[in-house]
Structures are given as C-alpha cells and as structure tokens.
Figure 1 (cartoon, rainbow, N blue to C red):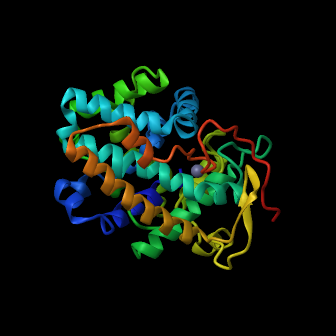
Figure 2 (figure 1 turned 45 degrees about the horizontal axis):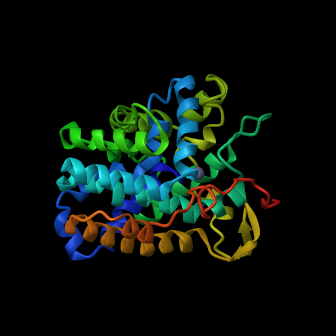
Figure 3 (figure 1 turned 135 degrees about the vertical axis):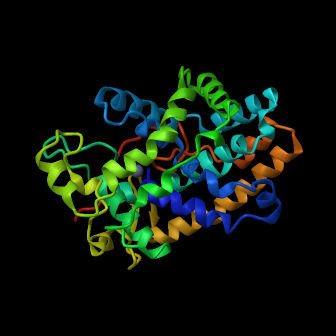
Length: 324
Ligand SMILES: [Zn+2]
C-alpha cells in the first residue's frame, strides 16, 4: 500500500489523464474502482483471521517484490489464449487496476519507508508506523481531492462492487497467472472473496465517525488492531504535515543512500499519475491489437518492486531512515 483511499483517488484522477481511445473501450471504468487495490486484496481477504492474514501478507510481499513484469505478461497471455481479454473487467483489472496499484506504491513507498519504516510493526510497542503515515496520507488525499471530512465521511460506500460485474473469466485469469508466475494455488477465489470484503474492511477498520475506534482498538482488542492510528480516519489533518515534504527537504531511498530526492509526496503522486496514464493507454492499445508479445509487455511495464521502487529481486534492506 499506500492506503486504500489514496489508491482509490489515484484511479479516479487517472481517468482524467487517459486518451479517448482508452476511455472508449472502458465504458464502465467508474464501476471498477476497487480493482486499483491490486495485490492488497490478499491482505483484505478474511482480514479478521490473524493466521490467514499473516500467510497472505507473505504472499503479498512475494507479489510486491518479485516478477512483476512476468506476472503481467502471464496474465495477458492467459487471457488472450482463453479469449477473455475481450472482456472489459479482465482488462480493467490488470492495467488501471493491478499495474497502477503497483506503480503508485513503487513511486511513493521509498519516501514513506524513509519516513516511517517498512510494513512490520515495532516489536515492543506494536506500533505500525508505516500504517500510521499511510493512514494520514489517505486523510490528506480525501480532503485535498474530494473535499470531504475524513472523520465523518462514509468512506466504505466507495468500496462496494456489484457481484454481477465480476466475470468468472476474470477470476480464472487471476488464478491461472498467479499459479504460473508464483505457484500460488487458489489465488482467484481469494481475490473474488476479497473484492466483496473490502467495503466491510473499510467500515470496520477505517470509518470512525465518533472516534470510538481509537478507544476500542487500543484498549480492548488484541495486537492486530492495537495502534488505531494506523486505521481510524478520525485523525487530525495537521498530523500529516511532517510527511508531505512540502518544504522539499532532501531524503534518500531507504535501500540505497546514493539515490537522493527532494520531491514531496504530491510530486511523487503526480509523477506516478503521468507515467501511469501512458502505461495504461499503451497497454490498452496492445490489448486492442490482440497481439500479446513478451518483448512489448516487458518494454512497457517496468520490472520494479513496489517496496523500494528499484529493480525486482533486489534484496530489501532498510538502511536509511529519517531521524525525527
Ligand atoms: Zn505501504
């Protein structure tokens, strides 16, 4: 991740950047906004079951750091061979959905991780700083782009999808390409169930009109929910300011100090939007041509990890973190 709402707004902003040819072939674009949650669906699947969740977090890490190009290619090849590439949901899932999730992660994560660490919790305090920062960024994005008060906005309404919109061919394509690329069995049904569970996750974990989750998570529930700051949207807007880098201070890639930047969070977001629109337009052009060629896909889709933004398969070692 960034958080679910940041990805959701990205999908909506992306629409305004796509060319008319792409938009013409996606008449139902708006109905499929949840697809942009990408590999995070693994985390939303049966999220209340800690055993399942821990296992799926490991799978998600696999998808984040390894064989990204290969997965996209296998997905398109499988869909082409079965004839399902003709279906709108099958194409929306991969380009505007899965690939865009990964791209925004890859662009924004180096900064988020530099500021807050990776996806693991502090073993002593159980505080999940990374989640805390991404939660604040969600609130910032909602207020900036949608003008809504994150504390009271009924955010779960944005994460519902009509079951009839999900084709069996989509689930089969996800299933086959996860198996071909990562040897993950049963991935299709996991995604299918998680599509439905996402709105429930948002309602239970994020929406917090009265600020009660802050009390409940931290005091009553166990270590999973502990640290409500990573979940509840009932947070003060100002808390996000230190993480936006609006002053353009220098920061470095957490895995490689020679990669230096002064970009702000919003700079990175807008860059991902620009590059992402090009990729989605080109990918849709390829799909429309009906010829799925490995070289074409590999030259369009960067083989980057969504964790550090650098080449997949590279070891992830967090060496550099901001000292606050
Ligand atoms: Zn993240």
